[in-house]
Length: 458
Ligand SMILES: [Zn+2]
Image 1 (cartoon, rainbow, N blue to C red):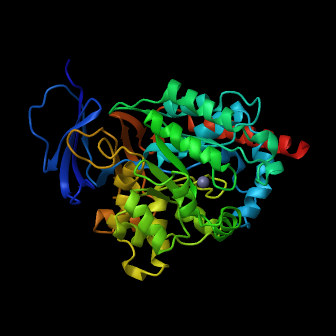
Image 2: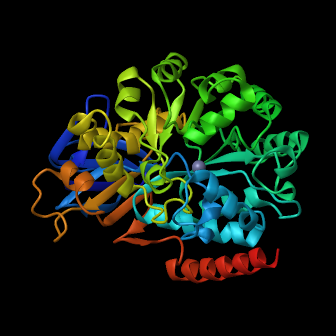
Image 3: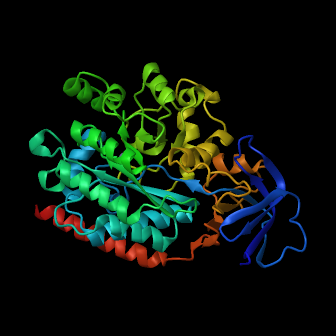
């Protein structure tokens, strides 16, 4: 079999490999879905089977962005409860969220994925944890949307079994039983999880949070994930209220509670981790537990500033997350590079908290690490999967900034001229090639309005 080759030349390249190799002007050769060559200067002459040759003058090539925390369904509940903290926001929105059905979830997933992909995300994840009774095949709808948009994808199959009558926040009809949640998660792994190097779809086990799931579901969920060889994901240490809740209910803070239920380890990544003391950070470092840092969402819900520089210094894998778009209406990950850098500088490390290159690493290699895919994606290296982005930096927004990585991270959100995912062009000239954005906009608006009407009927 002959490989179809795409040759990209004349662009700056930030590989985000282990020594941050960069080329002021270089080339990348993609063969089928892999990176075949990368280096300074022009590509070798005389390569066979070149189907496309791109003069990328004025661009920066980086690994595709990797999103490590999201809730796609929230795309149709954006802009609500805009001035609330986390718990008040959850209480305000759960009755509406509990009414979601399959067409709504499909529309919201298409909207979330399209927005991220257009902004340079090549690997997405969805932590979906609301499966109301009789709402259809929500996991299948989400995975179908990722396949349609053409994005590499991890579905963190969530669950909740602590409803309102049991001291939890969600209404009872929106939660599952312990056995039901575990069986459905197991079946999702059977149907959809692909463990291969090139996998476009993977599944993780992801009970929602300490205050919406039982201790048994955490314990049994961890056991299930390890017996099936998939990863574990949940929310952790997001707010002071959560810390108080854990101390009252379990007599310990969230990190100790997670450790007692088997939820620290190199196969676990946790969203937020805002309220971590030195011993919590040491526990994550000791166990190799990863973090999905969501700076915009944490700011919107006034949750606080995660200690990312301390986590990185301790050797903890850290990726970036959009979080659900009910708490980060933009739904874009490339703006999180900038927000991670700026917000961490407001913390205890000041101007030395993060550099532009450290922020780019969080959004690429760090994300690949926490999703367990650092061998395959997250940096531009020979043999890795061809997930890469060409950012246009020669227009009004960036042309006067000399350093391309500084332009990308400190500057305005850069247009994406090309995004390759698994070697396939999913974005060309800032437009998605796989789906009709205007159609998605129409359908998501209609489904958001339908959900609001259902929410008002309750
Ligand atoms: Zn979240």
